[in-house]
Image 1 (spheres, one colour):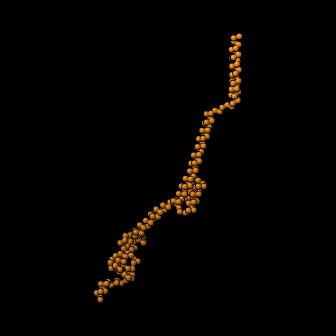
Image 2 (tube, one colour):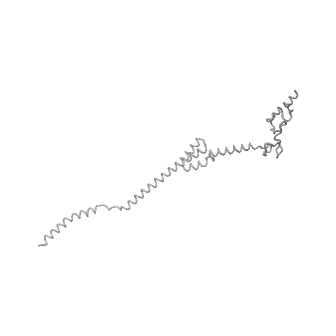
Length: 201
């Protein structure tokens, strides 16, 4: 008789607790299984890394393409002053990229304008030096300015003036040093000097 109230209290406690346990069990049973959190985060990080790599690759290709077009424009401007050729070469590389660059490298002028200018200066200096160096008109042997004949072939180069004995060119009719002449130097008669004319007077 004494145990009866204790048993009734225990049954009441169990009955009160059983709906909560049953509801918790039912809720647990109806929930879908939770996905693995570690696998999902790894896939997301890999996808983000792939996006970054693709972005930098595309940016590099765009910058490389622009750099090729700019280099071609600057290079063709240093090699020619033809505006049409400059625009054509730049558009060729801008449209066909590396293929256009290979075509441009094949057909571009070999020398830059600066190299052509330096070459012209060298040629002019050589020409001036050759002009200063007197050569024989027959055998092109190098002669000095006081040679009367060529030591190689014997061609007559100059003749002395009958009055001042300075060497004159063969085509000169008058001596530029003393003024002798007036006709042909070889066959002309020697003009009387001023002192002889005064003595005759």
